[in-house]
Length: 348
Ligand SMILES: Nc1ncnc2c1ncn2[C@@H]1O[C@H](COP(=O)(O)OP(=O)(O)OP(=O)(O)O)[C@@H](O)[C@H]1O
Ligand SMILES: [Mg+2]
Image 1: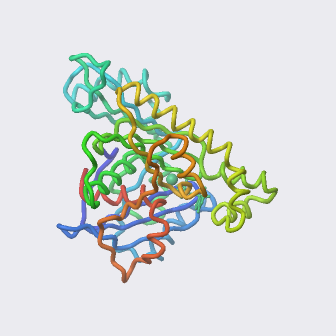
Image 2: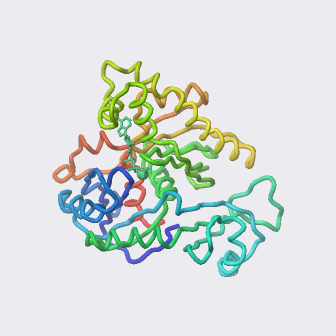
Image 3: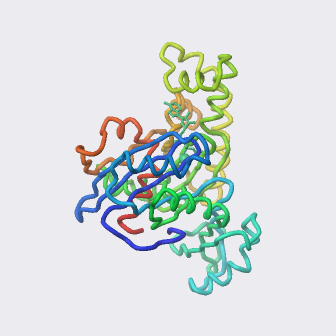
């Protein structure tokens, strides 16, 4: 479910304006296949520079369209799954205007609200008369800021989504196009680790069932390395990304923070597991922070479950005349949100 949807062409850019970098991926729909036809990313030094950086990113990457699907995230966005009495979608849209303040921690006059019935989702506490409803509230200010950047950058916003939907959409595409279909009734936790925040989204049979953001992410790991190794942030960032020879020091510097990070994942997986009385089977890491030295391995030990980084381009054609395939492969986990957005070319 996108918050807004406008018109649809044959190419679409998935544009992820994160707090540390702009990531853009273009998909072209060839009917039977989807192809990656452009890709670029650029560091974002400040929010003020965003429109210029986005414009440069698109021009330098030789993108074929100016139509973009983009997403909002962070403290101005809330995604909730709640139980409500069964009613039609039309009635639901009216009802949430009255009931949303029970679930949404914002003034309702400040937000755009979207709701959707999820009749196929049941939890054991629900009565026959109830249904599961997805509620999304985004601060108007957050959307306006975002649209302003896109317009200034000369782009046509076609779809405005939230990160959690882009993440689960990318995962669904991977499962559909990838070499193996997900085992049915499999529950996966998708953990996207950015620079400022981490999104954890839990999906069952590829459909989103839970999403939450918490605020331990890449920057905090950099801070921990800087403190422990007594270096400035720039140097710490470089050592963190490439610890060559200093692996043990980096591991020690981030050990406590990985524990705290794992506790945040636990909070969400415990909530899900007790609510639905079923276990999370696997954990998939994405976002730039997913590459942190030793992270996947430590989480695997802590949770006793398989933890892996994933490539959202598995099963896609790539236009090698316009796409730097090495950079695409190297950055693949960091491009998951952008890929999930661009995949909206297929609707959904
Ligand atoms: N090799 C690496 N090892 C560890 N961390 C890395 C590596 N490469 C990038 N990062 C971290 O990834 C983070 C950036 O990731 P990403 O681009 O997903 O964030 P963002 O989308 O800009 O931020 P946010 O989602 O919080 O707004 C930075 O904190 C950076 O330090
Ligand atoms: Mg991000």
